[in-house]
Length: 189
Ligand code: GLN
Image (cartoon, protein in one colour):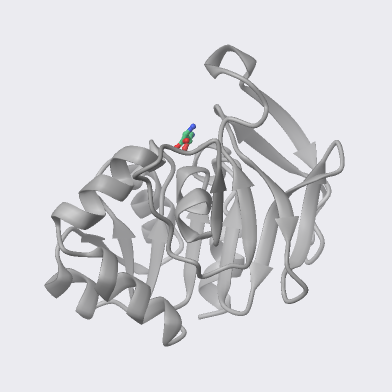
């Protein structure tokens, strides 16, 4: 099982390290050929406007949308959540999303960089107590469609959701020294 990490921009190296420490074969994905070789994909945090642009210039946007439509398991965190959603609120006009999860995601919903924070999340499905989550200029989900499971919220706003084999988190699990979400993702592939 080869697990790709979209490595165009952002926090991809930390995700790859988490996956490797769980025994997975992590591969950095930068080209359509890289994408074709992986069985699952992590879309990291970073800057969703830049990633949207780089996905287009790398000619990865369409092949990735097709793989997702065919059921590619994916984990998107922060900017990765924005990219995997169906609608972006407060996005840039030219910014695109992949529509793998039926959610409307508001960018920078908790405020600016200075409003970044950590929170102990009660996560449905995760054993072993709350998950310490790091939110960095994070989005939240403003609308979740009927097929979307909401697994955790902050102040009533969904921040961890799943639809089929795609999980999206508004926070950065790769920064928490807690591998449970990555482990859960790998077990679901
Ligand atoms: N604010 C960023 C965006 O809109 C996301 C921040 C992050 O990934 N930590 O893309």
